[in-house]
Length: 404
Image (cartoon, rainbow, N blue to C red; front, top):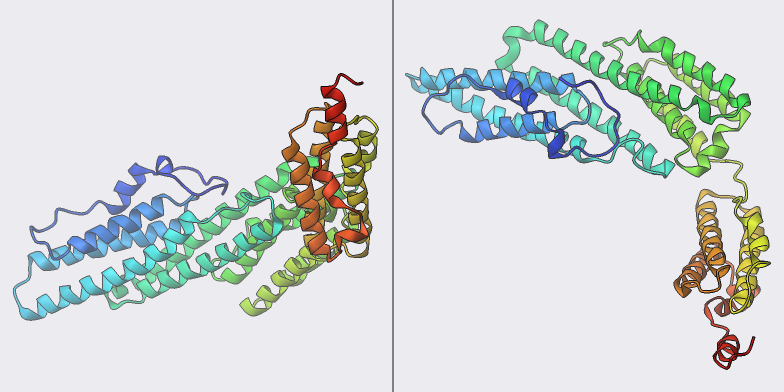
């Protein structure tokens, strides 16, 4: 069985662990009848989904192996069937087991196909992943409890209860270890001032890593959610989070929210504590003007005809957008402004070599117009933006006639 790996992208067939699959789904020799064909197909489908998960989920592996054992029991009943009551017994078991497997595969298929933490440069999408992870975790555990509660498994209820708790704890410990290891690697990205505060948060999470209680699943989930949320901020994959992680107040607020959450015991209160952390991470960030903006004017000084006039208008438009942004520094506005300034920078850098692709100016114009629409500013307040995409025809005529 492979070690737990980072959750980066959906699994592919090349990631499929065939040895694990055979171990989990290999059945005893079945009787030569077709009544369990669909059941066997569903078992193998569930097993394949389990083996395509991007991290070991021992709780799911337990469910696959139990489903395999129940299928073996059904085959034994089919082979030894002598009475109508025995027929009814295995028929009920087949229908019940097929239903259980269909429900399991619906969950594991979603789990194996979804984008993973760290696969997006948008913090909101990564936070959405934590939500999907939470839903799938609860769904898997609820389905396992439903599976175990069936009368067909009551003869080993105590043994199964312990197995489920141990498997769930192993899964939580493995996932938390992955996220904390990744967090440790990000420390070098922080400023010196932020590093000491970061270590305090990391030490708190690490101190709880070896003390997860399988009977307190909500607390374990809260720790995992907190670690994942901190990873999203510290990684800086979303450029907005770079501003967040450098705020001294962020570290004070984050560790305070974690400590408050760890004092709770009910799932409802822990959910509230986590959502409060999410709300804080996503709001009131001291977003700064993109650094590229300061370099635009210096680029214009190096741009000759035929693109000089276009470049001047382009920079003027960006300057107007910056002034509008200062009044409302929202996430959406920051993204739009960043795109407009970045596209303008690309256009100006190409214009320096005199023979740029005109598409780059068109791209910059489109980004600026999109930004204006979001900011609800009319383009006439800036000037005739059409000049950005117009060609200096006089320059071309002069060049055609050999004029300098």
